[in-house]
Image (tube, rainbow, N blue to C red):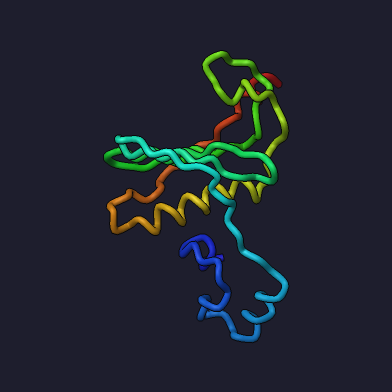
Length: 139
């Protein structure tokens, strides 16, 4: 897990402190794959918004850097059951709750992108905020 979550490694062969035989078995039976980015928008203040593919649908993931921290907003649902006029997600209606793997996948994909940009001065993710929980208020 250290390789996957600490180093954002998706190649078993690079996990050199794991026995070579076990790495080979893992290569045969498992796959580590971050969700695909369908679209990326960058703002002049450093904010990055991604449309992330989850199955045949998309959710929004947003990276917000600040002077002393960086927040990642991840989606927990595809669409939303509430009809808030200010929210573009509400215009889609509610489709489904995301699986845990799809939520973690958003964090992992963003961490891979931000981690790859360390030379550009991107602040590492320090906070994670769940979006699309407004419908929890309706229960």
